[in-house]
Image (cartoon, rainbow, N blue to C red):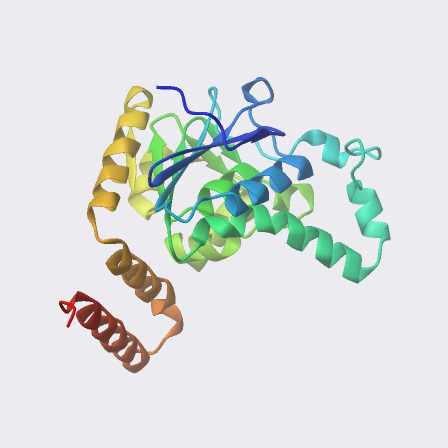
Length: 261
């Protein structure tokens, strides 16, 4: 069955089948290198989701999930019609902040409270590619995966919303070491440290994602939304605050489950 894409532009394709949306990176010849145009397409994909969507699968064509930022960003010319890094650095603080914020919009929607996002990651996921995988709630990786955060070694910082989930998943010390050294994190370490929920042979990646998607859809939607909100907020609440949040959420669920009348 071939689905008509809801969106297909700038290296991003969105298809929707019932409650599942699939966002695919579609430039394997460039190892799905990222650009401002791709980030805008990701933002548009998030805004194009029908309200019926409960699960978003983020995947990529080819041998690499994403090799990171397209190197043209580091040239004085940059991308056609886009401000180069040099241009951004010479602009005002307000313009620079607004530009990076717009780039981040392509990533942040994957954490939306009313859906669960799964990254299916194979091969290289470097820099912006690593951060795109981190933007998802869950990650299933192929055994050939290689994560790396290379921004610091280039004199930059990870700025595409990846630092918060990275620290949450592996802790401050390991996150600092991964970012500061720029080293590769292989599949076994990713699974052991919580970066990946599951590591499977490359040939089994799609099947593993389908199995997880099926399991997520089996849970009642409102219960899953409430549970996700509880877990997302747990680290910022005290135990007493979390207990209160649990009670309030359960109260809403019990009332919703009452038969009408």
